[in-house]
Image (cartoon, helix red, strand yellow):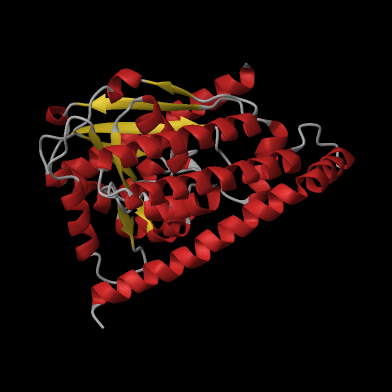
Length: 335
């Protein structure tokens, strides 16, 4: 059996499990909502949580299930009608999916997101270097870049996200790379990233979460300890970070080296702080979010150093973004 054949069989098994699970979850949660919604609301009120976080999360989960099902059915319809390779139609589907899910997310959080620096997303041919704070980061960036700015993002995502049916089906029909992180030799992965960033069109951008994992204080401390073993100077400099993790430059370097015509876009957001665990999600839904926005800044390629200087440039952007995140959170709390 060839490697390609094994890959197809693995994909078929994964989709059989994930889509079956999705349909069962959607059906049961919808049928049970007359019981689950009031029951969860009672639990919330009994614990003094007037914003009803459990009830809100339950309703968003149902919304997510049905948006996913519509996305899967739409992708199936495109395949049946011979348009399974039409990238533009799949980007339109992606734009709708992100918009619908973000509407549900905004409703659950009680605050609508906004995009700042939209002019920096007016055209493509760029690498977007984004912070990573929660499970929903790719959704917010997709809504900002695909739904709002009408660009075509190519994502660098962890391979585990292929268990999301829409990301699996639509995400593999348009240019994306689902990264295998637990490998001894990452040369093949880096070569795939270079290919992803080569020949970008006027509407194309590549999006990478340069920290490599969701940020929290424990991960930040461990990252700084590892950096200190190799470069005490860098560790001392990056210890000023309060919200972001020090970026891991390898993937970003591969993308930047692929094509010298691509600009760089640094992107940060607020609104999902602490939403990297179930308890954190409930806490955010209970307390609300002080601010909810995606902020992009474009850097002309001529201002970005090549070679060894790029890592220092990336660190400087990360320190700047961390300070901006801190300011946005403080301002939101003051408001």
